[in-house]
Length: 362
Image (cartoon, rainbow, N blue to C red):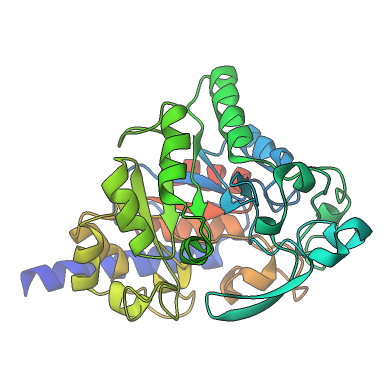
């Protein structure tokens, strides 16, 4: 009973903090009161780079994120035909490159079943790296981010090797450690077509000098067996991603909801350093927060929720400004509210705002 009462007191304090943040002016001022402490100092993870300001998964987006103070840059990894890791949101590159405008690749269009869903488009595994390098990135969300679309056609598809080189060069240049936070995209699908990811990823990271729990690297995945295989190959910290609905594509667990229970979190702790939940699994912006932070911390897991975006379309009502879905609301206040809940880091498309939010609550 004493433990339960203690938890209720903590949550009441946090709810007051959230209420103050939601009603505070846009200056980002916060209430001076006790919050739930994270297990580790919160880190700012640039989601696909500074993707709110440049087309995602480009060296330009990653470089800007580093300039804005991000601790980690995040590439989603997929394979080329010649087994090179490149950074794309999906292996279907129809919406993130100008491939459809290349008549020489018209016959590469295909329909594939990936993680149980049908996709028609152009896929990285059907292109060599040399061929992919002839394409140029474009903004995936032009309706919400028209300023990003102005950069369409300017940037190439980067390789993991190029992203590692950028992180190392910027670490040397800035004097602060810039880490990478790669996600293995559709690992079961790639394994099914003869392109398993785990050993090659570990080897590439090891060649960069990164093969320990203190390396500036996290590897994340929505699948389970992929992470378990990585756990057997490397000491690099692993993050189990979870969504607010559904379950892992490899069917290793029945649902993410089951994985988010105290028993499920204890099982995750056997192979992962932390979890990357959909932010609504912690708090939906309306009701009382869930117990996920407390339960995960009790299992020794860190929490890095995703994804904090500035546009009203992605913000809880309390943090919106006006009615235009593309207009920017008070993302700094939203991030500060989650920091009050004890998260250990977060993914954001706007790392500069994230860095300021972390500084404001220290």
